[in-house]
Amino acid sequence: MDRARAVRISKLLGLGLRHDPARLRLVLDRAGWADVDAVLRGLASLGEPLDLDELEAIVVGMEKRRYAFSADGTRIRASQGHSVDVELGLAPTEPPDLLFHGTVERFLESILSAGILRGARTHVHLSVDVQTARIVASRRRGAHVILSVRARAMHAAGSSFFLSENGVWLTEHVPPSFVDVY
Ligand code: HQG
Image 1 (cartoon, rainbow, N blue to C red):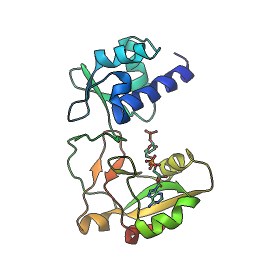
Image 2: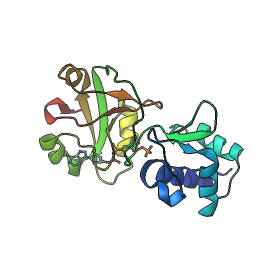
Image 3: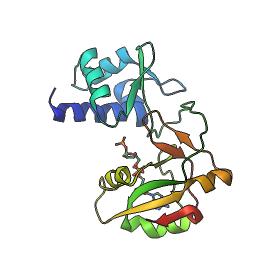
């Protein structure tokens, strides 16, 4: 499959599995899972018919591994990034000392006063390394800013952290006192 089509389908999966299940005619369960057959039907209904092998190639082949199949292969979900209310069932985990957040200069003043907010998503997304944070920042226009988050100290002060299946750290809110410009 050509990359443009894979990216197009990956975006539709994001829409259906993270933000707006009805657009793909899906119903997600509490943990965010949808039936694979329903996903294939939903994609076909939006003009992107594909078979199970092609879906698997997209899920496994994209570097970020945004989506994952259930152990029995009948269901699929997004590993992070939701705006719909789901309970991923991740265990609270102690984070490393520092985590990173890539953003842009125009958000900086607000972040330094209100902290890092989850916005429309269920969690703030933090990266384990600066390079990933740079990629996150580069999705946006304007000068990039990398923030470091004193995650271990936040955890010690009572915040919960979760590590998604694809290696993204999640927390509900990062107070400004734990944020530094990197
Ligand atoms: C900013 C992609 C003003 C925040 C990426 C960010 C990531 C504030 C934007 C994942 C703010 C929210 C998530 C405040 C935060 N004032 N702006 N107080 N607090 N912001 O897309 O982290 O490709 O919801 O800095 O790779 O950019 O979809 O979050 O710029 O992992 O899998 O508000 O999405 O993954 O934007 O990206 P987002 P994000 P996928």
